[in-house]
Amino acid sequence: MTIETTSNFVRPARPQLSRRGFIKTGLGLGAAAGLILPGSTAAYAGVEAATGLVVTDYWPVPPAWPDRIRLSITVVADLHAGGPNMGLARVQQVVDAANALNSDLIVVLGDYFATHKFVTERVPHAAWAGELARLKARLGVYAIFGNHDWWYDIAGTRAALRAVHIPVLENDSVLLGEAGQRFWLAGLGDQVAIRLGHGHFRGVDDLPGTLAHVRTDDPVILLVHEPDVFTRVPARVALTLAGHTHGGQIKFPMVPPFWVPSEYGARFAYGHVVEDDRHLIVSGGLGTSGVPLRLGVPPEIVRVRLGART
Image (cartoon, rainbow, N blue to C red):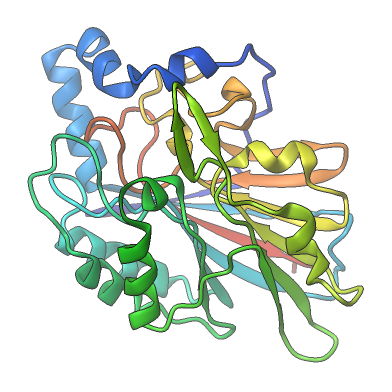
């Protein structure tokens, strides 16, 4: 396995038409990959999904984050544990790579197990959770749930994280850090948690209720699975961290990703987005959905560094 590091990689937001109809018909990546990828390209995409791993560094400077508070955060998103690309040995590699960054804080942004039709190795809840239990950081490890956790086994996912003592922030906030360096870490419930049929969903997210737990003037970092809520995130939040999109998962050079599970198309597909001085970072994630392929969007761990750069 080769781990590459990139730094300050920013993709501008591109407003596009909503992909609501395409996303919610169930066509998704499965049909698309079969239509657009020839055999050799598909083989490469399978290898990239199973062996590539990039550490992407960001140094955002949000107005709501004081320079005096220096903080490093490792972001693990969209693990989707299950072979052929995210078997147990691969999960172990991801955890080792995340620990090697020695960040102050580690956050895990949901979608813990594979749900596509091509799973070759089942990774039980106890197995992937046991590996995540090895994550270590000075200020702790915190998690949220993703839509796949809710759609396929929220009770099992909840029990697995509870068993390994990884706290889940679900419409809740916690104050972290020492005196003079404190900040709030807030976690939002999933925005499309409950499928109602015919492309309709009900979320369990409560953004006002989550931020109501913030009881001091210390800065706030918000964890969300889907980035779409960013349009409603107030300037009070210094930084929003999201996953879910996989960066499009299959992306060709010089063109926006054609499949992004977002109401906003490619606007929040990937990377560092700044709108009205509000900052969002969307991880490309690690695993796969629809098909076990990645092209142009390698699996990645994100590292964010806040505070004065020295």
